[in-house]
Length: 157
Image (tube, rainbow, N blue to C red; front, top):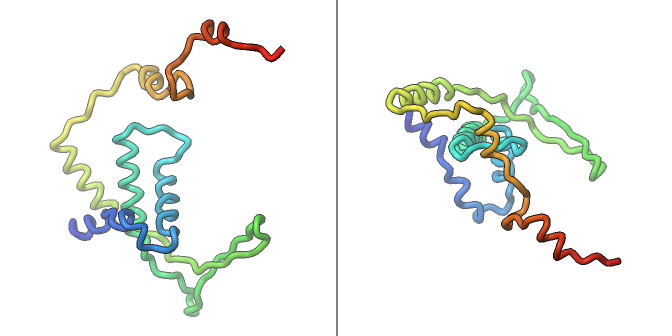
């Protein structure tokens, strides 16, 4: 894979023009891929989340046009799934397995860029990192003192 092919595979062009499509399946497919790289269960700093988004875009764009899978007898291979909600079976033609031939190129580019950059200092205290990620409350307004709130509280009794 050349650098130009890799650059084209990494483009976000399909995301910028969703109004041209009638269905949102392409966007939903990409969002599903993004969740594999950046799960909602974990918090990420901005640089990490952005990098994971780029990796998801690369993976999605390179594998989006995979050919359909056929058996040795040239028959299409299908998969099925039952939906409890609709009470019906759904069938689709299976795509060929993913190949990750771009990974060595990506790794070499990362190593080349590491030669010219330096790492940021990482805090030695891991509690400091954890404390930055935890918000004091879920409220989006400033915290009001409990004693002030109790003074203003009016009971229904």
